Length: 357
View (cartoon, one colour):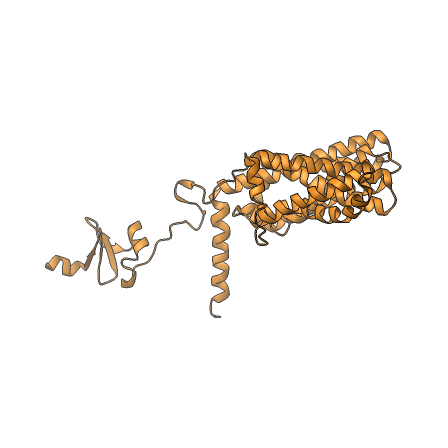
């Protein structure tokens, strides 16, 4: 070893680590290290008192070239409509069964019709997104409790199997016995259909979805109730549509409240729901939901007002599904949405494990 090398310290790659804790690069002067990204990765000089420079600035979480940390969803526009029709059909099953128990046959028949319409539309939308029908049937080959996609596929299949005879028995009178036995199962499975999509998206790595895993199921349940009640109110004579009208108003109120609670708990992550295209759809949804709910509450016993209020409320529920869908894309494309919460959790763990002063 030459005297120059012995004075400078060890030679490792293109970084020289000095024994006195200073590091420098070829041709550079001595100074506190590390001075290169290689040193930060390999740890050269750390054992000699060098300090590591954080790769992500503390003042503004970001990534190299501001590239996204997680991939955006690959879902097509059919998916938010699937969210909407699944919620509408699932909640309509519960409304239809409750109306049957109460002896309100006119409301029950129309609600079973809506449930069957949701059963017809939902698989078509899902298969269209998948591209090939056999991909949906392949998801039924196994049942995995820990997979929302697997559980959701079976919920959709079970809903189709139970709603079909229940709707046929109510609308056509055949098969009457099988239809009556299928009604409670259809209502139970319908509740899962109206909320499982929220569990599905909150199980992804998209920050705006995963961090809202507590509120999204309640938000989707409220929207499904508002949709089912509004649709039933539109096609049922006002004298028989009272339960549906009350369900629509309660669902609209629940959607507004749950949306506000979700935004407060998400903090900075709520920007994905309130900015850009998702923000515009959210504002439209709020206006439509408030207007439709108010119209049904104030003049819902009139036929024209019931039809108008129900249509407005349905439009608001659809816009809310689209807003949630678009917020996921915006959140995935913003690296701050991923890096920021991770850094906060790290700081919280450090603060929890720090020894008392």
